Image 1: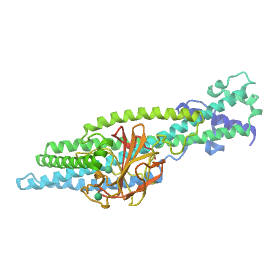
Image 2 (image 1 turned 120 degrees about the vertical axis):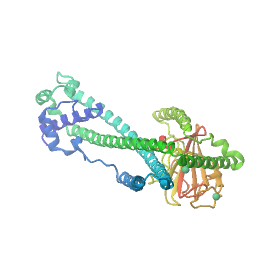
Image 3 (image 1 turned 135 degrees about the horizontal axis):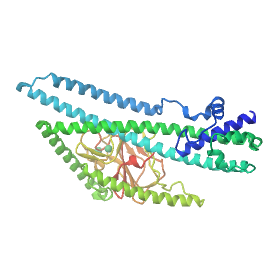
Image 4 (image 1 turned 90 degrees about the vertical axis):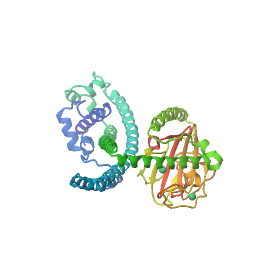
Length: 462
Ligand SMILES: [Zn+2]
Ligand SMILES: [Zn+2]
């Protein structure tokens, strides 16, 4: 490639790369038309702006969304049918009972839908958090690359009477000036490569940004839909005595189940479990407490990460069995969440439910010490009651990661570690199952701080 062409490309690419980090996509640096033309015509990799416009995420995300939409449309169909039947029903006394039944069905369908949407929202929160992290790393990378390249440019421009800043950020005529400059002679293959690498990274960065924006939009939309469903539900309950009665009965039953569960936990191992797993959770008001706990946990994590970074900067070797407080997803290749943390029909779900096939390996989210396990439950099948084993958690493992962080893995077919064992991050600790109070094969995963419940989705990355 001749030097003139290469120079044109470098100038165009540098402008694009700079625009990337400044946060503006295209209008920060006005390029001379000729430089722009050259850049897009000659090297497709440098035209980072027009990557695939239809960004639908990975295959896995697409599949999850299809699955989710399928579930929703199934419920929607039923909802439509109920609504039609309700409409056709005349307001007579003999129709009253049938009408009641239909309203109850309507309520139960909204409840079902709300559960489906809620789980999907948790899943999206996880994905968004992962992408935010990776994009942050990428932008730091790009910024570093550009800082280095600026140094390089400064060296190149020493001969001229224009500062490198003016050249990079200046008006359109700087290109002409460069054409005549000493720079032409000095441009090397090295510069082209550096800029190509930056431009490529910028392309990835842009792609991720688009994906995150799309996801955030989708998330907001679904969250709004959920709000609307819940508002509708509240009205239905208020206007319908029979439904209200049933709701209260269901809440009472849930509270009873909750009491039973608390009882099993508090009695497990002569109360030892009750000393580890703190807090009583039963309703929406507990969310505020959980959010407080998460704030404290986050502050602690910042402190721990800072200390680890200091050691890394001092080139200290960190043993591979030390907890770095970067919690990882405990079930490989299984990103679906069937139930998130929070109030669920009168119960407070304290962890994430990650469904999967029985016998699938479960791995430790971080390094730590196993402080409690149970391996005695033989009731490894779906049930809507508790067999009482392991305080309702069936066969479980609790890992202490130090500094107040605990993770709990419930309902395993069997555990593969015992009390006192040191485990590494990602180490297999047991197999997925349906022991204890579990309706089907899944991992119930809790992350606690100071003994109190947090939402693992806010701390764990895929
Ligand atoms: Zn059991
Ligand atoms: Zn669960």
